[in-house]
Image (cartoon, rainbow, N blue to C red; front, side, top):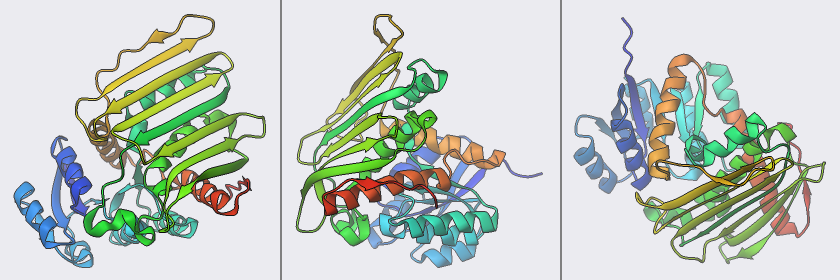
Amino acid sequence: MKSTTSRIALAGFGAWGQMHARGIDAIDGAQVVSVYCHSEASEKAAAELLPAARRFRDYAAMLAAGGFDVVDVTVPNHVHAEFSIAALEAGAHVFQEKPLGLTLEQCDAVVEMARRTGKLVALNHELRMSRQWGLVRDYAARGDLGRIRYQHFSLFRHKFRQGSGGWRYDAAKVGSWILEELVHFFDLVLWYAKESGAPARVHAFGTGQESGLTDNFTTTLQWNDGSVAVLSQCLSGFEHHTLLEIGGESGSVRTWWSGARDRTLHPEFELKVQRGGSEPETVAIPKSGEVFELEENLRAALQGFRAGRSILSPEEARASIAVCLAAEQSFREGKAIELNFTP
């Protein structure tokens, strides 16, 4: 009889990889059986947190040892695609941290390998699973808001953590700070306006450092029907504050989230929706935050793998990467960029 337990090999055991491990531990029918550790410090942490799991300092050796159904990729951004492709070749499904890749060529390589092997890839855009941010998509899909004409998404936060070895401050490894976090909001904006199709052009503005990493960044997306979305990221702020405002032809939404840190367990948040000509109503949300949403997204992804489907395929995730890269190009060249979503 086939086991219903998802055996997971965890690729990467930094701070966020350890959050993944805790999320998996909370899921019935899921178990981390192997861990790739890139350093002595992460190997020591894995020994303490996952004493029963096999530990490897070589990723290829972990894949060759087998004994898993899913590889959970949480390594730094520049090797996301490489690690996912190797896991697919090893016969595993892949749950991968965003971004899918740092270039469209990397994204397409993951897509092609998934097609070739018949294995599934699910991206961790955990905000889609949120009881707060995901509910906005429900309103849009039901038609409660009518055609969405305006979106404003802003992030005001403290500086990024360095990451192991300072990888988040190395443009060759992080790709960009747009791909590190703002990609979540590009994904949501495209998702919310799914019925309107793909945006036609992007225009971006910001301030950058000598490293090439842009700390304050504003992007305008425009659809051919005149609808717009404005996304902004300020990394020279404090705490962690996010705001979304949506205006549709027959309804609107305003929702925000604030915490001392992005991973706080006790944030403040609110969601208000106005449908038709009615008064705005405050919607009850039991809890919100990436710590909770990661666990829910992992649970949904594993259920999806068992059912033969992906909760967020690499083909769909590629779209947000394409917009991010076009926004970066717009910033560099100082002009609007026409978008083309054809692979």
